[in-house]
Image 1 (spheres, rainbow, N blue to C red):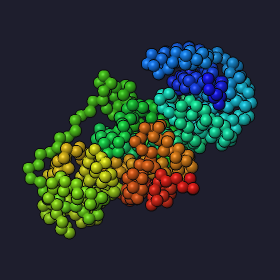
Image 2 (spheres, rainbow, N blue to C red):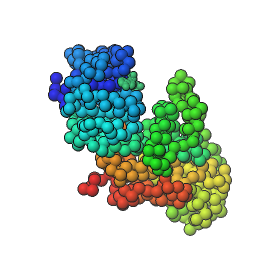
Image 3 (cartoon, rainbow, N blue to C red):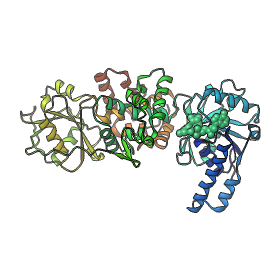
Amino acid sequence: MKEVTYPTVAIIGAGAMGRGIAQIAAQAGSTVKIFDTQPEAIAKAREALFSQWDKLQEKGRLTPEAVVGHKSRLLAADSLALLADCDLVVEAIVERLDVKKNLFGQLEAIVRPDAVLVTNTSSLSVTAIAAGLKHPERFAGYHFFNPVPLMKVVEVIAGLKTDAAVCAALSGYARQMGHTPVQAQDTPGFIVNHAGRGYGTEALRVASEGVADFATIDRILRDQVGFKLGPFELLDLTALDVSHPVMESIYQQYYHEPRYRPSVITAQRLAGGVVGKKVGEGFYRYVDGAAQVSPEPPVPQVAEMPPVWVSPRAARRAELLQLLKNLGASIETGASPSPAALTLVAPLGFDITTVAVVERLDPARTVGIDMLIDDAATKRRVLATNPATRTDMRDAAHALFARDGKAVSVIRDSGGFVTQRVVATIVNIATDMCQQGVCSPKDLETAVTLGLGYPLGPLAMGDRYGPTNVLEVLFNMQTVYGDPRYRPSPWLRRRGAIGLSLMHTEE
Ligand code: NAI
């Protein structure tokens, strides 16, 4: 067997996480000793892993020799004292500070002085768990994701007193287990759970303003940005009894930073037990495991299409005019719209009402279109009305933009469209993390793409849609809402003009 950084590894806690970590550690070639206060949990974990390996052998993914080897290296330990010879101890027990501190206190008296101790905590402070240890320098966070063998990223977290060499060795061992390590400072949510605050939280805020329903928001973010799951589908999958407490915990730990403010929508749904797919009802109803989604509103039939006038201040105006031409619209070129014209605006961050008023347009004929993303790069167009928009103008715009068969959603007026708001919030939170030094920009991108499955890392996402566009969305939304949650991070302001994902000496 190949050399590994830690030949003998103890796993404490044989639940979902301990089991997964034991699997990849044994596969890497370490001897693994599993301990749990419930002896039956150890037996169940070993049985489950044995049958997992048997299945992988049946599928031809493991050789019979490898399976015999893995099984021989997976041992049960019925007392902590049996862990004395371990090189690394991984704790994956109940998420309670007092219980974890007590366990590590006991372990210090048992293991060798050079053994490394790590916690798989997802929400507690690594520094707080290490406080009181005689040797906090050999203690770190080692945060895996569920299911461990498939989620190929691990956060290596340095507490205040952790020795950098310990983190380097843990990173090397992660690679031996087939995982990608990322290095995080000990801050609430570390990297993945912190960076993940933008998506669901902003989508909930959009829903709470009645801008669009849950299914429409999901469709928009899937089709416009390429997220595999919409935010409400994702919340249904993780379940609100897991995700709402995470939102609250990060908000509390950051002393009510407005960017992380949770939503009453999830608080109420959690209280009512409407937590997600596992109970058959969340943001969607589930029948035999399948979400029941109401069909999209049909494209309206419009007998006579009005001429179209485009505001000179529209974002991506040239592209919008070309699109209208391709769709066969009759385009007006005058300085102002004729009395019959459908009036199109394409703001970044501003609401349609404000734009109509500022540009002195007739709000009854004004409809907005989200042009943050190049039309060719999206599978859906999103239009927004203002409270005064006439239904014939709304329907004309809907029918016009659906002429080539592309999906169209019509939402209500708000500062920013759904995609603008969510993308800008994700980029803003990520760049704020860079500013705080939670991790390097490179590790941020790696952690988010592997840990959250986003189509792009947040910095690359900002670059794709234009850092100055993202900044404009945030500046204007701050004006519309007067809410500090939309203030751009200093990192985004500084880097907006030069590109976000460029790695410079400063990083
Ligand atoms: P789980 O409830 O499936 O398993 C916990 C196991 O620990 C149980 O078998 C329990 O008997 C055992 N245990 C409890 N107290 C113990 C003690 N004092 N000594 C020894 N064994 C003890 O929990 P799960 O989901 O595996 O989570 C474990 C840890 O991993 C928690 O700290 C959690 O925050 C963290 N985590 C969980 C993730 C998840 O998605 N489930 C993701 C990342 C981290």
